[in-house]
Length: 587
Image (cartoon, rainbow, N blue to C red; front, side, top):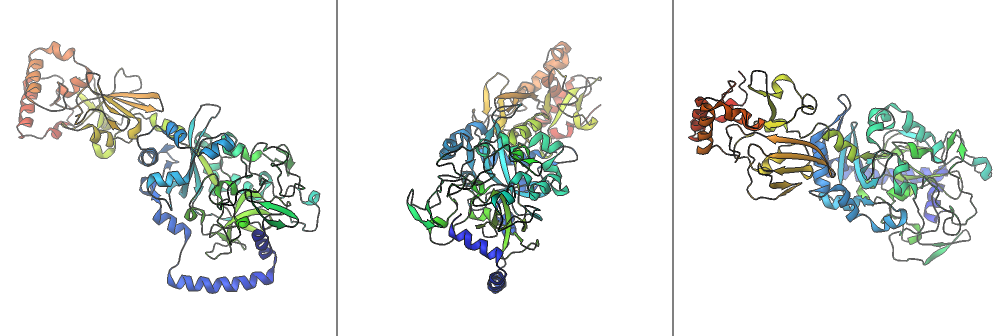
């Protein structure tokens, strides 16, 4: 049996008389509260949480691309200038690592980093609001040390029964066995087949960017046993319940917690009294194996992952609110909820399913309430659906990296090349795309960069995360290193080398071109004017220039450098002409 507090809740779900009395009391309290200030968990979350990318959609399902602005915001806000893999390893929950041999950066640390301890970060994905629950590292068949961001739906969506089979409260375990096995549950089937979850359960996005639980260390080896319940009574008895001596951090596990085999023997019993037979990982019920959910890309979280709020004063009634895997804040656990009749409500009888099955018998599974509390009603009840998923940030960044170094539209920067007329051609004019039309080019050049642009301004005008960018000047000196300015007051000049990384892998290299800056100091000065005059007089000089310098020299863009180019540069220096006028001239 579970603790007494949840037993009382079980009776609430099973007793009509008590439910009516409770409902009347709840309605009175709700009316009083509502008359003062209505509170909706989802609304509070949306209004108070940090919105990644200002709430913009992360993924475009039509173009199959990530919104680079949102992705960059997530990376910058969570990791700053740190290498994501190193950051997770250095800040991992040590106790979680010892328990499951997996790196876990919980919500508590993420929330603190982004400066929103109570509500954390919300990401819009597939038109739904998701909370960032934790970060971890995972090895998949195709790559190692993938940075995985776990997202937990900010509020429930729809309702479902856990099991379509009617429970037999007087039947034996053999009669009811399998009813709270998550893989065979109706709520799981709904997640895998429902149209509103299709983006996350099957198809391109799910296949390419979501990681299955069977690759997540803390889900493979998840243990409830020994977790702190938030009080200071370690290993002290909290009483006898139904003849069972209970201790803080009870020595049992919830069904559907670990996707792999938890273990056996003392300390690894599924139930507090050691009499209840646990499921086997290879056990089949209604055509589903116990561990099948490890293959899913959208799933219900366990109570070990989410935790539940303390109710009452007895420490034995507490469910690991402070030592769960994700360490969500209380605000993040709360939700609007779905009532037992399947309708959405804001009263305290609103609940959503966990995947955790009750361990005393097969009749119940756990739910989380609107306040973040827990209970374990019969599996035949109807409650809300609030799933989670693992987004592979490493794959997302690589997909963005496939587009290479990408300037924002507002920057005005554009890739350029010399066309068949030997004139400067902007990609935007002919709908060229970097990484596609120029993938076989010997050298890629980014132009339309204004003179006197400092390195920090330049990097901030890229869609890519600052922590993925390195910049070298035209003499090979590192001036910007993944978020850190290495040379104070550095100015982007013609011939600077910009590199994009994914982890430690360099995935793109481009060179910069500042129109009129042929000597490469990022400014237009007397030396540039003199150099342009020399090029106009000796055409062989132009022939021997690098591509980025040729593009910088062709100010009026007539296919060759003339003395008129030098005169334009002199007038720009004197403030008589604006250089921007010549950016988009193509003869």
